[in-house]
Image (cartoon, rainbow, N blue to C red; front, side, top):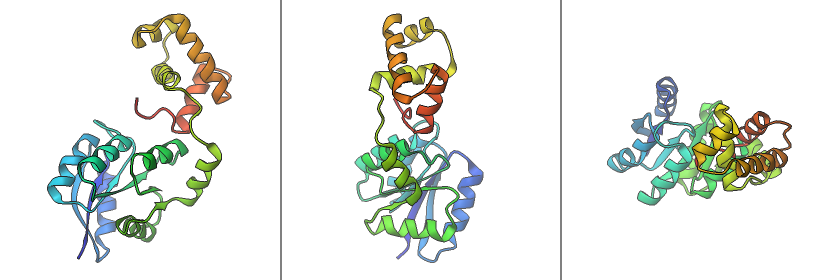
Length: 205
């Protein structure tokens, strides 16, 4: 019996390429494709999917949040994250919410198919280099509020702008920015945002 797959990626070309590669395997069948994270659960339930392959960054709902929703609504469906963004924070968050695997998009086709089979069998399939990097990086040092402030600071804006957007006092925003800069080892607010993004500490929120 074939393993029934759902592919979720907002890039149609990538989705099509993955579908073509995986469909060449005799035991794998792509039965659903979506381009938004908030379409994952309904499509997976309707198609009785065994394994969902989700990108991290998608409109509607990111892949981590979609994983959590899918595991709640359809616990029998395993999740394999397949993403360009091989960041330690993303891997940690994905596993925390119930993903069974995490690989990057340049994974060879045979290795990707094997990863699908592993998660379907109830095993883990994690990119080994990323797993090692995640162990070294540790969990996010940022508090939830510090992460909120850095997310708001992505597009620039003054401290007053950030304070208005977050409904906080300007002094509180400055304190959170200062703490976040220190914790990320950055010299500037922009560098703190970049470093936190690279580690996958600002996804969601």
